[in-house]
Amino acid sequence: MAVDLNIRQALELWRATFVDGVRATEPDMTARQLALMLTVYLTPAPHTVRGLAATLKVSKPAITRALDRLGQLGFVRRKRDDGDKRNVLVERTVKGSVFLNDLGERVAATARTL
Image (tube, rainbow, N blue to C red; front, side, top):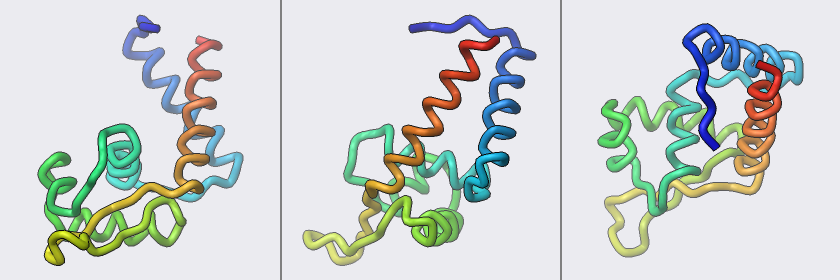
């Protein structure tokens, strides 16, 4: 379903969604952390630190720092690739899936009010 929003409506959608998240005492996440999490959950696996850095066009240390925070929150987990020990795989978690599902529902609900 395509939604035709003007710039102000699009920004209001994000503002209202984030305000709702703040009120719900959601964990604070940076734009980079959220972009990384959405990439892991919405694009086909497997995901590696190297691949995510290339996809998001940021350094591997920046991905590592974002993954540290997402791991602390229980939204992703890292494990060594059994096929290539040089690679670190980034995996989804149930807790992360629930968080993004709730976020998606809030975004959709907010969009319906615009």
